[in-house]
Amino acid sequence: MSEREPATRSMLDRVMLRSGLFGLAVIAGSLFWRSWAITLGAAAGVALALVNFWAQRRLVGSMIESRRQGAAAGLFIVKLGVLFGVLYALIAVAGLDAIALMAGFSVLVVAITISGHGMGGEADPSDTQEDGDAV
Image 1 (cartoon, rainbow, N blue to C red):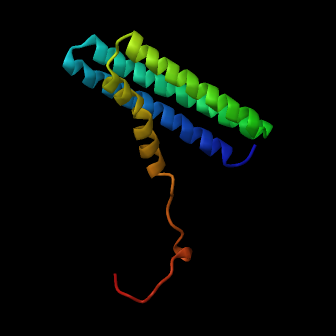
Image 2: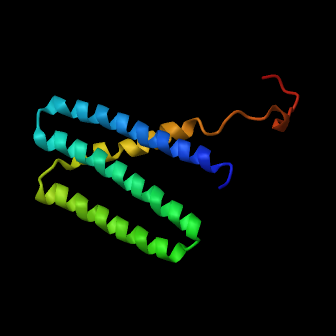
Image 3: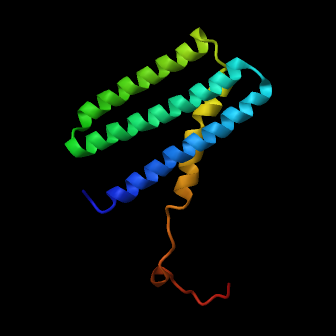
């Protein structure tokens, strides 16, 4: 176990938590339209995003531990196929609103962006170069 692994795990846990919280906000916002297709679409999108992120974490973690990239690539393709199949079933078969579904699914992108914003840390003052110009 490397020293960065707990920090990475903690950051990924924060992404999951923020995705869930943003998802609740999207679902609450979907109530404005008073449509089951929209509200259930938003909820399904959030759930699908969280399950997809969880599966991605597991796949990447097992790939790193086992150092087998070939098998993991195959699993990524299977996971992507399952994701597309579920999206088709939710939109075409169940009749959920596609835009609401994507709004729910996009909470993961927002959570990753927000969580990644603070990852850079502070710059080391010894690494800065002075050019003599006034700021």
